[in-house]
Image (cartoon, rainbow, N blue to C red):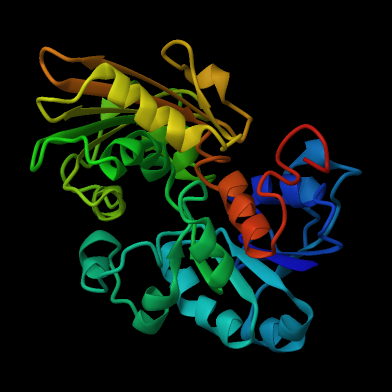
Length: 341
């Protein structure tokens, strides 16, 4: 297959390049950046020297002219770009019959009225919002296989929803009960551009965007329940932990909780049920999500923690999972130890 990555110079884009260069079903890879990017015309390995001799492809400047010349040669495109950029260009690829895998938030929220509030722009392609499938790979495989545009989930929502959905789908939560998600991410989640706010010399552990973070409506939408989301950032490079606290119905037992998780994830090789509370080192630089929980039957309180790599399971590797599902391939292809996983 022939694949393009727009935004290949950023952290998530670079992870896509690393995965797709070893993907046995990808024979042509086009790497693109925005027209005004300082990285245009550089080789990918100039930005990421560890990839020298592995991927020395040029970073081409994306434009309407490039699209016109190449759209018939592409089977799939990954957007690792700012939200507004994705919503501006995704429709052109869909119209050309190219499958779109968007790592931004441009197509995650179903209600177009939410975009000015949470993303700062009015959505210009609301028809695509109806077509877009939320790419939580472990739950939406059939819909992912049938659509031409996949909205790859955010990193915080991925860890939060993997923690919540087994319980909510089983109907074990207390109706209208409070659901609180506390998330902590490393600084790579803020992107590659330098900023004092994410500098190791300036940053300690801190909360930010409480009660107004753009991932809150995304988590609530896909959980089917109102969620309070408290994001935090900490001075480590990569990785993310979400810890979810919620009340369950008075009659729910520990056995029911255990069964909900075990039945949900017994055939999902990239979601692992841990034997103890997970930590970020367990999953950094891997496509796995590690989950552990504890339930207090007397208080009817469940606490679930999920650790992921924010750039992989929270972005690039989940996007490739969706790509594999979309083209009828093994979901883990190119994500585990060998090329033919």
